[in-house]
Length: 358
Image (cartoon, rainbow, N blue to C red; front, top):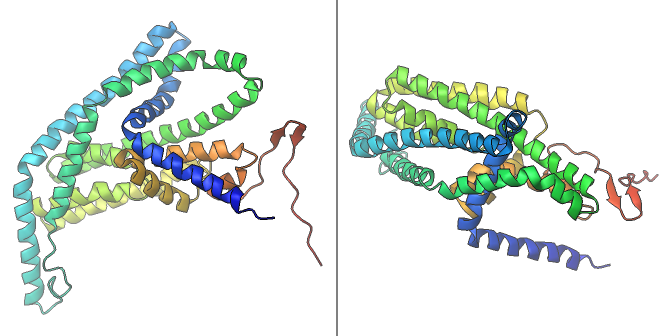
């Protein structure tokens, strides 16, 4: 039997959905940011609801999130303004460092930058990219009104959602269990990631300040934010700081900045965070990297920050689907049996593997 139509229809649907996501990015992104803020602040609201009226619990939860983000936004905006103002001077020093390095290599009959094909390379271009990125981040921070309005309505809806589902759906218990499972996994990921990112930002900020690097608050906030981007985030956060250290402090202290970033990312990102997350995340490293590229292409920097939580939700939803459960199996970090699927005729266990022939 020809199975091409069964494959082409999901692929065509996928293309249409992706095109819609790109076209509606301005509308969907604030909603998704509010959704993940709601998931992240849900434990606080649940704790407050046990002690206070619902409206007051929601008000305090949103106020706490707003205070943290506005405080970080003010510090980030001030640091970005100072860094942008002094960036031309840093760029000039960085160009001079490249010239001095080329002369030092030539005096010792070593391979020069020109001979390596890097004679026209301008390391200060990375600072230009950093300036543009920082301006973009500052713009995002100042446009969070819609996100917080959406957050208020989402938290209000969370209170009434179980009662609505129990009346609207025939199989409300199973639906609540499935989505509760998804929320639990995403919430665990976001809480652990936020805690590790905060520790990373704090250590980077204090360390760069002790080494004498300008704008340590900026590098701490950047380390916190970019730590949400898997695999590449720590490198993107470290590059401008290390180049600035080379231009401002010289090669010895610049090496200290490199070791600071490398040590923090090794201990927190590669040892502590995997131990805390364990296998609950359930995504293979290839899928994590592919999701970073895909969501970054669809929604830019916001998509990169949300890549892993979005992919976790997709995997958990697919895992409970009879038709598309095989996709969830391919996304998982470790191969495992498909879960039991409820069918109209009852509960159907996963199929047994075929017997060996011979």
